[in-house]
Length: 155
Image (cartoon, rainbow, N blue to C red; front, side, top):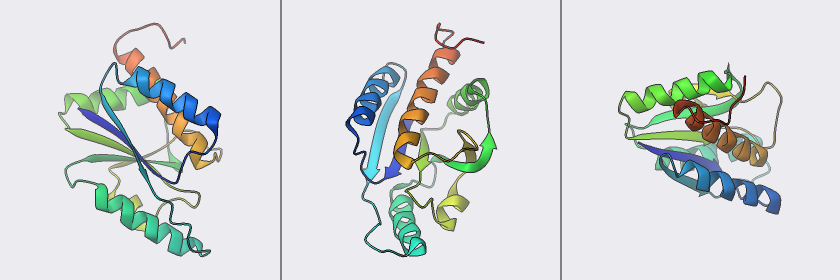
């Protein structure tokens, strides 16, 4: 299975870039892994227009057979163990690609939300879309160590 994280906008902070690079290296030990960074739609000051522009870019790169998990603060709250179970189930079901979508600063369009097969939340708190990237990657790494029975997660 191929795993992809898709997001809009650049990761600007050096410490986040370093952390993302570290988790990318760790995740690649378990699965084919890609990060797709799309340009930000912030050329407009209108939030709706930004969401629509970014939504069109996101939908354009998604294959119709791909399982999409959207990260949204209003999504289903899952534990790390449940998250690992979701990931493992999708691997067993034989999906060729699993894509995690992280919206931009203003979230995602209704069309992207509707396209998602599942919507999960990393927390009911709001994080910047840049911070969510590294949080997701840590949780992906944690999930793979749980699936493989490796010592990383402690209960």
